[in-house]
Length: 188
Image (cartoon, rainbow, N blue to C red; front, side, top):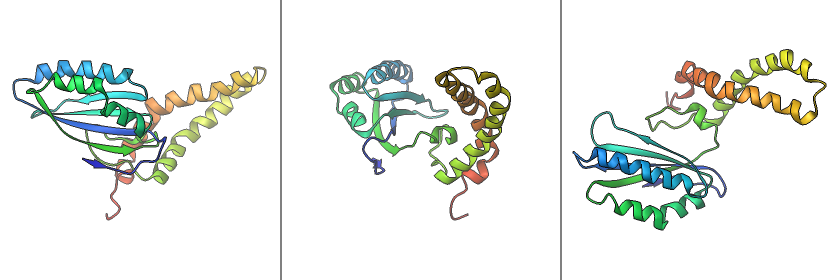
């Protein structure tokens, strides 16, 4: 198990790797639905995703938690232990890797890989490149027609418009477009 140092109160992501016995993939997949639902109900859980293998019998679970202490509570919980007993002889947990995150990494993640997120200064610059044109558009097209609205409502327009556009359209496209620069290793 490799663990990076995390500070108290920072979100944390854990990847758990499972080796499934050949012929038991269907049973294991059924189990993943149940344990994922259980984890989602646990305090501090911010999401569970399962990655199925293309070939072979290794499955990966990506779990996001609000902080390391709540993750530790889940890992040591009776509920999790009970779910693990259900698949004895079907699959074996091989280990986990934990990483502290700022939250912006999800805009820059490469699905199905263990490639680390780019340096924060590159994430900031890329986010600026994506947000600035839309900030101008919103200020030019939307803001003038909302001047008579109450301040809390006017203030809500900007993030309600900008954040979904950035999250679903702009940042995935920019991170694909700039991937060679974003993910270039320091020694290259």
